[in-house]
Image (spheres, rainbow, N blue to C red):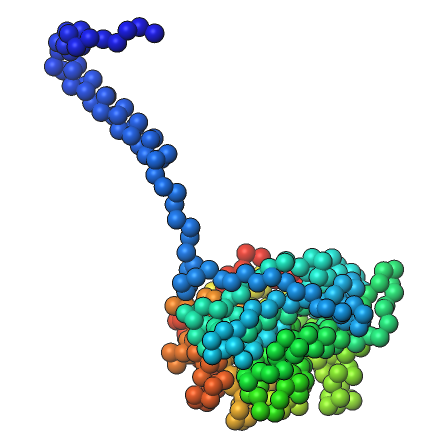
Length: 435
């Protein structure tokens, strides 16, 4: 390495460059110094802060899974024979004696083939369930996200039987491999364990669920009431669970045929003694029929354009061979004027007609918005956030809280799409999966 230049040598070098070249050389030195400083700053700068939650002030609680103790001995098992599970977040403060339970959703299985696929997922086996669950929306412990229920005891009950906690086949079913259709026993085993953990002393109790879990809430609402002291305030909420018995775009009643298969496979008909004997087994499984006999206060939370039902009830596989509904199924803004007429005149009207008889029940509530979404109580953005849908300037969380605590009567029915500018409408990358 050559020795460094002396000051005298640098002066001679500078003079020989001349003013024009000296200016160019100086600019080059400045550019090099700037580049070096920028490079060093990347290493000297502190790490970027962790992202903060979009809504609220804290990240969601992560709650560990609990397998139901002794469930296997009772025959209360998932499709594959593993024990059922739940996630429990204890309450605190003035919510320590109040309980909110949420029944997980996730469609149904209608055949041995679809149930065999389901057995190898979290919807058919606790062996595949995540060991921790995020508690968001109605399960959040953040008062900015969940103002009325944030400090209650909260339980997320996992779904692994394929028939909305209602199947009750005594023996293991053999069809090349074993199946257990024990949803009713799972319900009973989970309730027994939670009662022993303090649910039996609840001053207020709230059974909720979304999608297939919403249907479960209709099915078990009165069962839940019967478990608790008469002095307790007990209510139920079904989110995105009012599945419709309507013709699809090809004129078939696809969902009725689907429910017939589920009901026969898992022997659920005996769960509905009030259902008329001249009805098909699947008809008794629809919320419109189940809800007729419910005596406990119930809140119906449903979008008029439920994205899951638009795909699987109104335009299911086989009903649209030319794929004319492909874009409309995933993004309501891409529906044609004719498709919107069907959504308004057939689908929305069918929902409003079906719930009409329940509007007169004084202690019932409802929030029917004009959004394209599914399961609003379990999405922070839809439950209570600056972007949440509003009817009469109330979010879902505010409307549900007003109803539960008897602050006002809540029978909110939105105008037709696209009238509500506050709607949070989902856009799916791909259609919902169906078993």
